[in-house]
Length: 172
Image 1 (tube, rainbow, N blue to C red):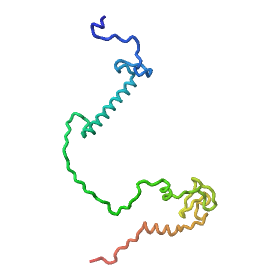
Image 2 (tube, rainbow, N blue to C red):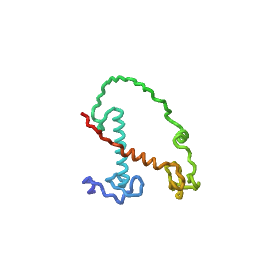
Image 3 (tube, rainbow, N blue to C red):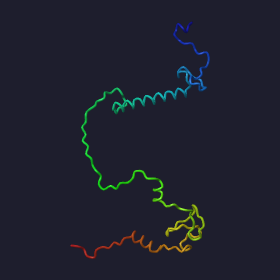
Image 4 (spheres, one colour):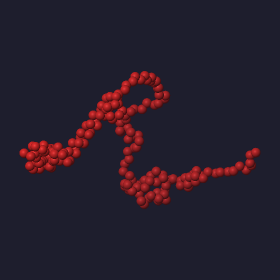
């Protein structure tokens, strides 16, 4: 009877299970839900409010997240000038995968040494002559490499060190 006079509720007789039947105990502070279910419910409510406000702003044309601001609309005249492209070759937007793979990279067979025809797999050595060799034939003297290393080195040095000559006579 004292509880009726003061307006307080009587304490629950026992622990209350979560209203979502997850197996945990709830409390009146979390609307008789466990803490996890209450947290999930609050997140869903926030997401629905955010989605509703963003949809409302898109429909109304407002850029602010606050829906209380008045919406101002104005008529805007925009003139559009059509610009035609000049000499752009027409290319298909979508090409089949077989055409692209055929043009970009020819089908390669198993990787084998060019000298002894031994399978090299991932351990093959690429030579400057463009062939693949095994560990035995990887050096240029072992596979009679046709690549001219001497000329390539001379060209690289000449390109890296250009000749600079000063004028012999000063211009007046």
